[in-house]
Length: 379
Image (cartoon, rainbow, N blue to C red; front, side, top):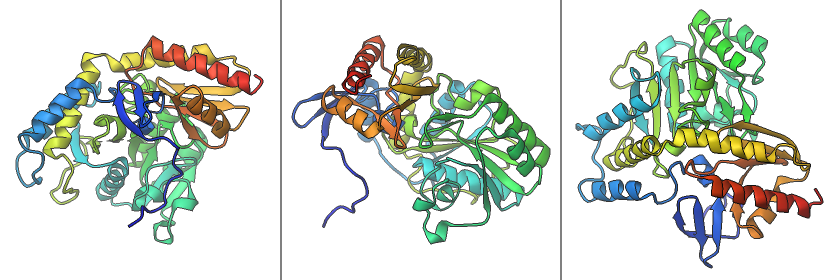
């Protein structure tokens, strides 16, 4: 049996990792400024993470959600303590960001008894049924996913957003406070505040998709917290468990929980909770949210003004760098010659999503390699 041909793969296979570094089968060391697509939050193979998972697996790894699982309660308490304002919300655990968004949209529709969703142009929310329907990319929508129940407005167009929401026909508006796949486009504070006000006025649920931007990556626990707004539903995944597949929804107390509305087989298993608890503990103990803010500022300040850059934006350790040359060419030199892994968005945007544990040494290594790579392109 062959693998289904889905991805264009890089010609390297990591076989070992530690902190912000990877080693391939040939023993070549790479600095990881991609973090497995924003998943690696506390660094690869963190000893506390490995210990918690190993100990849990030696006891019990899984049983269904038909029984009490005190690890779910512990995780909810630790997340509440980290979130700065969401302590009174409820937690639903699932397995991925797409699943979190799928259930968030369903929950909003249940609650409002409405069937329309407002989403953003440039958005990416996942590849499951409703998640891909609110994703602004027809190329990944199968015929069965296409629906007239979703409308799109431009990110940061306050007038268009307000006009749509005040029609009073939407169950929810779903927003990435920083669009990842869309090129590290940051939702303005004014836009998010407008969304909150218009949702309150129209009885619409405000869903913040923090799957990529959340969990401390922006320098706040949630990226939307920079604007001072509070969502009705927040979705999480990626960084929550450092590579173990965990998704989560944080749900406002004003939304009534009814048995049977949501459900999952694998979500919130003993092993999944142990992984997520370990991450929450490390994030707090090692002050990784503050570190993300400080290191992100250092990267942006060091690169601002470089001749090859047309724009640099983002928050914390979620940074987009628009280049004058195709990002594929630039990334290839960075990877093959200077052994640094980075991400991409579109033809010209370099996307940085490093582990939140990077320090000044890693920042200096990246900046030096970036400048050397730029020099190879004559800039």
